[in-house]
Image (tube, protein in one colour):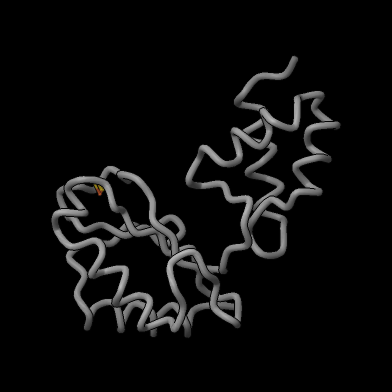
Length: 143
Ligand code: FES
């Protein structure tokens, strides 16, 4: 029986090397067989951690925190601004596969609420202008 850490590590590696930055159903089954862990457990772990996804994501994963403090500070407004800037709705991926939008629970940056995490970077104090600049910068930076 392998440990949960090994399973998480495997899922992270598979996701890192997958097109679309997510773990497909086929990959989940492969991992289940290779590690001898039930498919439901692999599914459970893959869906529990916000760094992992079983749905296609963009090169930049925009995660908007909507836990209490961020919600009160206007997380939904931030989400609407990102939706307008990117031309997609929450849960979707841009056509060029560059950005995806999703909500997440607390990312430990409540002091700068409403907080947003894009890949490994955390941003706070965002407004329409700052979001526009950020999206513009990431569009240029992307592959
Ligand atoms: S509640 Fe949003 S970062 Fe903590």
